[in-house]
Image (cartoon, rainbow, N blue to C red):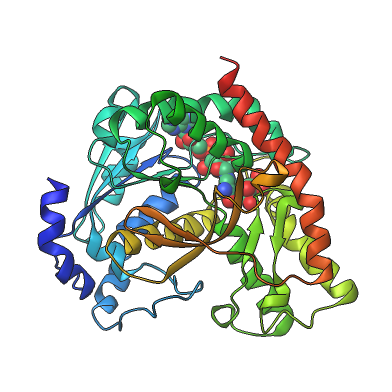
Length: 367
Ligand SMILES: NC(=O)C1=CN([C@@H]2O[C@H](COP(=O)(O)OP(=O)(O)OC[C@H]3O[C@@H](n4cnc5c(N)ncnc54)[C@H](O)[C@@H]3O)[C@@H](O)[C@H]2O)C=CC1
Ligand SMILES: O=C([O-])CC(=O)C(=O)O
């Protein structure tokens, strides 16, 4: 149904009409959680922004800071939001469904993952437990590995062609787990699987903007590597606002970007980790996938994908700028010139990434 309507509505959608017959189905797995709820709400759309969006001019082809609140693409293109969770999704769906934007919202319970996934074009996965103070993301592995494995098995069966965005931590391991499950099921397409590292990009732009007294929307930072501690590598030297940050200020900024998650975990004091900023970042990444699916060119986002860049060093997945297209990954862009400090960050990241990825792969292979 969605595919048939998509062809008819693409032109309208490109024109950013909010009354267009919206073509895409987007599923959120883990939709009732701390991230799932604001993410789903942003995907549904804010009515004020809906109203204003008819006055927005089309976004520039590529700007990593383009996502302000709710994208006209999401408003025009999401026909159905399928909210799935092992608990509470129907309630969240009923609540969000009252927001007066065009998309339809449905909630699905544990025994109905098939209906949630069937026909989905984009599947975003924030299912899993969050950190408490004193834990690393890797400490979540024991619980979240099997959650992600179960969801991957379902997606392999019911939505093997969907573009998948993984939020569940530890991302450096859960993305390889997802890939291994798909390989076992014979449906793996490396172009369709993404680890969502957008929060690192969002933080970088905010934190650099803060120290430079600039509006973050004018501060775009590419972040490469992975999504935990030393594997997070902000390429500040490639940014106008960041290239002259040096010495202690540079060290402090890099540390804040790499360990921004800890800041939130500590402030939340045992009640969870980043949820609202992640909802925002997840919605921005979903928006990029939707724009790419819709045929918009020059959609570029840093994301953790099956990548050739460091395979020769035993790292099969790596985050870098990726050009997105209707089939998912269109092109993985090279890192570009690195400063000496960034070369050092890269050296520190590679062995940690290799270890995290192997742990995920071994988890599935050992069963
Ligand atoms: N990639 C990133 O940048 C970030 C990742 N995260 C990660 O996202 C994950 C979720 O965080 P929160 O939303 O704060 O946690 P939460 O505990 O508030 O929500 C998780 C949700 O997942 C659901 N869930 C558990 N098992 C499930 C299954 N098998 N199928 C479907 N749903 C299931 C739970 O019922 C719950 O509603 C954590 O692993 C966290 O570490 C958090 C922030 C940033
Ligand atoms: O720190 C955490 O556990 C959650 C996360 O990934 C982040 O906020 O970047």
